[in-house]
Amino acid sequence: MKRKAILLFAAVVAFYLPGAWAAEGQAGSAPKAKNVIWIIGDGMGPGAMGMFMQGVRLTSLPQYPAKQSTLEQFINASVTGVYFNHTYDTIVTDSAGSATQMSSGRLSRPDYIGVDYNGKKVENLLEEARQHGKAVGVITDAYVTDATPAGFLAHVKSRKERNEIARQIVDGKAQVVLGGGQKYFTQEENKKLLAKARKKGWAVVENTQELAAVKQGRVLGLFAEDGMPFYGDMEQYPQTPTLKEMTQKAVELLSQNEEGFVLMVEAGKIDWALHDNEAGPAMWEMLNLDETLAYVWNFARQSGDTLVYVNADHETGIPAFHYHHLDEDIAKHKSAQGEMLYGGNTDFVNYPYYQKVFAHKHLLYYMYPKFEQLPAEEKTAEKLQEMADEALGGHLDLQLNGQVPDYAGLLDKTNEALGLVWATGNHSSGMLLGVAYGPGADGFAGVYHNTDLKGKFEKALGW
Ligand SMILES: [Zn+2]
Image (tube, rainbow, N blue to C red; front, side):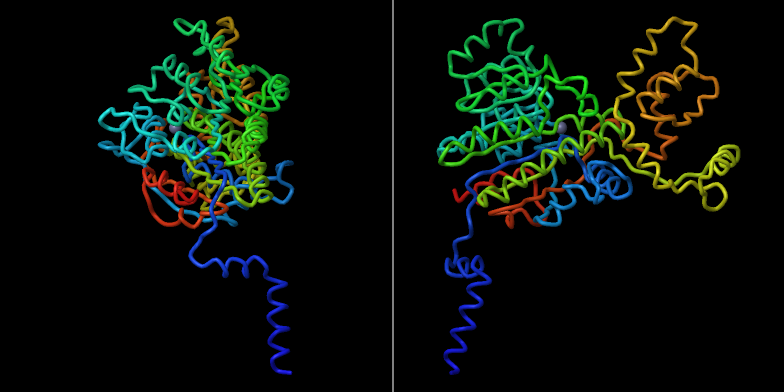
């Protein structure tokens, strides 16, 4: 009887824990990833990630009825590590040096693409993946010759050699390259480059319909002259695929390869909006990343053998709400509007300010030149407030008091009215977050440097 009971117990455990049972049986062999999808949020430091996740919690966005971002859910289900990104001799990096270090595992310098600090060409993860029979692809919603994608596709001494980067993309071994940057494939000495690309087997596509029509083989998608549109402006560009749509097509094509694939997806304009210190458009670029992550994570859960890694190349801007003391007049004005202030004049920033940040979809950076083009008599503070409200998606009292500031001044007024501060309009050296899900994810825990990443992926892939 006793023996029977033990057997019954074992059978019940085996029935309920088939995965655990199988893993126990393969001592010493950690599960290997067949595919890697690596999402890089350009400039996406912890400040931007936190603002996005907290903003989704404290706002009612139609995209998030449960008030939880995919990024937050993904982090909760994944392994998180932190890492530094200093280069060979600088504390702060640019996208070129960072992409090179992440893709090659070697120390490099700002401005360098695919070469180490000595200027020597270094093999990147995608090139190594090709040797293992994997299909590879690179996607960006900036332009494909920009520093981050170039760091995975080319080898040049300066990121400014965009025509040369375009030639190396065409001559390279990627199966899928999608983004903006058509002009680098058609200008100056590259006038015949797209004809050459077609001869080399690339399908060259320019819009959503043409991309959808590609069912197999190689595809070079160039959907804008330069960078692709900001996510908050996308409804004006119905012919242009979103980052998520490009990623779906890339996965569809690359997953036809029996040996698996490695795909790098850059959400490139988080950085651009953060450089401009415009929080709303930066949050819309985070929404863009979040929507793409939802698709990628779902694919990974279904496939079971795909490692997803989400990180940033560097931090940009460092936005934060801060409490601040108000002038008596402004404190009275705010109180009269029904805003609760603490200590009489201290503004700790009420939750509805997140709603104002998310309402701001369109860059003031694009609005301001339109204001400047108005006839002199129309360039009034009232008109500027009106045009700003349109870009900001609602009325925000900018306290212009009859004055007409320049663009930088308008930004200061906007951030002040939103209770926001920014540490810089450039990059910072701040520590970054890397989040890994799927086979091999455990190797991405702890504190590391961005040159450790290539080795971590190699280990996860079993190389
Ligand atoms: Zn960058």
